[in-house]
Length: 310
Image 1 (tube, rainbow, N blue to C red):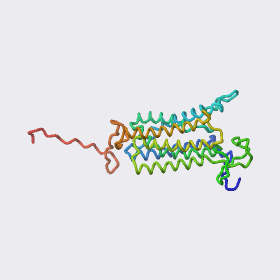
Image 2: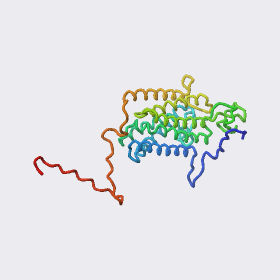
Image 3: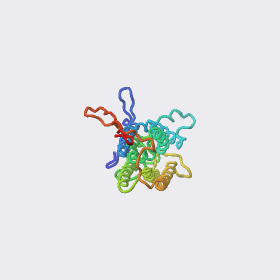
Image 4: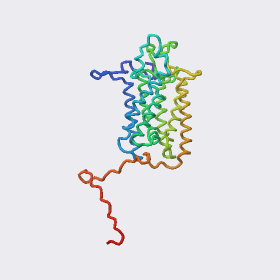
C-alpha cells in the first residue's frame, strides 16, 4: 500500500458466504441504500399527511422495474461487453457482478413508482419530491459497492487520497506503471450526493419545492455531478456517441429535464400543495381509541328537528 493513498479492498471482500448462500457486497450496498431511501421517503411523506406504509406499496413496483431498467440500460450502453463471438449470454442477467446503470434505474423506477402511486392514490410528484433527498442517500450508499468491486475510478492522480489499484487487477489499465494512483470517483460521488441532500433540505426551508420541484433540483444536481465525473473516468464505461460517453449525454438530459420540470410545474402550480393524495383518494380518518386501545363507536349524527316540532 502506498502511504496516504486509499487502498483497494481485497478481492475476497467482494463477496462472502453465509451458510449455503453467497452474499455479494455490491448487492448488499444496493439493498441497504433501498432500505434507507424507503425509511426516509416514508417519514417525509408521513409529515405531509400520507398513511404509514404507503411507500412500501409503491416500491413493490418501483424497485423491481428499477432493477430491470438499470440492467437493461447498462447492457444497452455496453453491448460489446456482452455480445461477441463465444460470449456467455447469461452474463446479461448477472446483476450481482455490477453493471447497473443509475439512469436506467431512474427510468424503470419512475414507471414502477407511477403505477404504485396510481394504486395508492398518492400524487406521483409528491412521492418524487419526498424521494429526492432519499435517492441521493441511497446512491451514496450504493457507490460503496463500486469500491468493493474495484469500479468507478478516474484518471491518474498524485493527490494523497488517490485510489490504489493493484496491477494484477483486471480493471488496472495495461498501459500504466504499477503504483499509479487514480481519482476515487466513487468517493467523489458519495460526497457530491450527500452535499446534494443538504442543499435540497436547505432549499425546502427557504422556498416551496413541492409539485415536483424538489425532484427537479435532484435531477439538476445529480446530472451536473455525474457529467464531470464521467469526464475524468478511466475504467471501462459506456459506449460513446460523437465521442461523448452515453452517461454524459444522459447527464445533460437529466439537467435539462430538471430545469424544465421546475419551470413548468412552477407555472402550473404556483399555489401551495395541500395534500399528497389525488382528489378523492384521501384515506378515511381513523376512529378514536379508548383507554384499552380499542376503536370507539362512531358518534351518531345529531338529530335534526323538523320545523314546528319541539
